[in-house]
Image 1 (tube, each protein chain N blue to C red):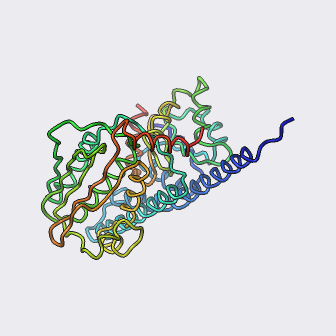
Image 2: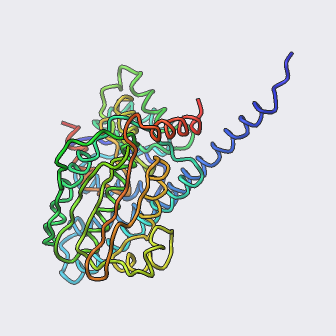
Image 3: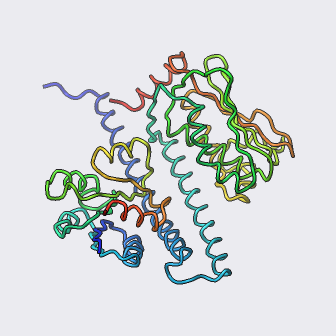
Length: 121
Length: 265
């Protein structure tokens, strides 16, 4: 069973994505902020779903730290955000190492699951 | 030791104010979008059968709820765009190699399916001669095209939507012509205003936010162009046009300087 680490501080979003991911057969681990994310990545998830706006340290900083560490740099990261996503942002996150950047208001939970499946192969 | 001059101090203050504005807008985006994303997510899950099979009556109700929340999301997006544009906190990334015809072609390809669902033809009229490249922010150009073509698709019940182009002075003009209901003369001068009766009444019926043309106007004018209603008659459709400056034209250079000075180092 594929393991997903969901990094998201908002309880509404956490509950929804947790429900969907578990329903679709994933083993879900949750981190409510950036520091917790860096702790929980030690459980070796297959994919990380990462929000950008997080308390303590931002999603971008988390991504940078993940990519700087040889034990975590190859874990695929999918970014889920509420902020407007421009062409530049997509290029920047790809530069930083994320596989995808998705807008929460545009993408359906099924589409997120499809992306997780795509990158956890 | 030299004291900091008043000009440097006020630049720092300006930067501080800008960063407070950005933070405010980010927080508001986040707070407004989160509950809406959650509702939309659950509705999509229910419609996909994740909670079990759904009767046709329930499916209808869920679909209406989804339309309503999507409309709210569009409205919030529009209002956030306006906040950022009016506060001068929407960065413009100018590129000088933009082929408007090609951008329109890509957009039309992505909308062909929606058009054929409504039995409308969506046509790109390739200009006879190759048009010059323009200077613009590509994402914002696409936003304006989506607004105009999207509006045309929304309001037109039958017939066609055509995107055409021409060169005038040192500008490339893009026009979107539809065979929809048209715009009454007494409303025509108000359609580019935000929340005016003319812009909201009809769009509300078809699910829009009434903000798209206002946002498009701010964007095009900031890029050095103009946007206008070229023609419209009741029952005979509407033709909207916008212009963008050719690369290396005097207007393009003026805009490039303006954007550079606004964005700072």
